[in-house]
Image (cartoon, rainbow, N blue to C red; front, side, top):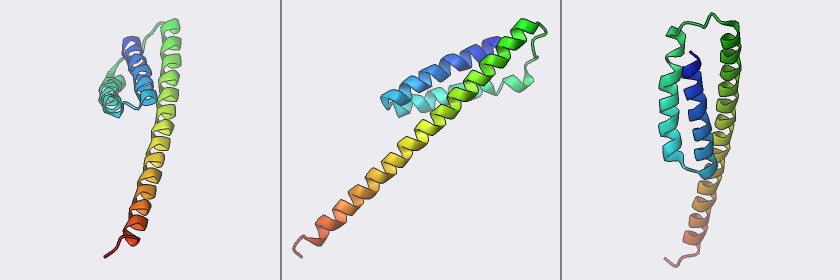
Length: 101
């Protein structure tokens, strides 16, 4: 289980890097890969070692926090793009209104 979470954490860091760069194509690819890895967790046995269980708990929380931050960043980017599209459409309408027939 710990190895699965470590891989998910590595992918989460890569996703954050891609988001920061605006590399949305790779962001999506990495998210799908992380989702496949995380889908294995419910069928994976919890570690019996107390220290390893603590590490699993900490990594789970970190991956969750990173995912939430990534969702916020993605939503902000989407909102900004929608705003840009609206402004662009408004500019086109204004320009068309002043064009001779």
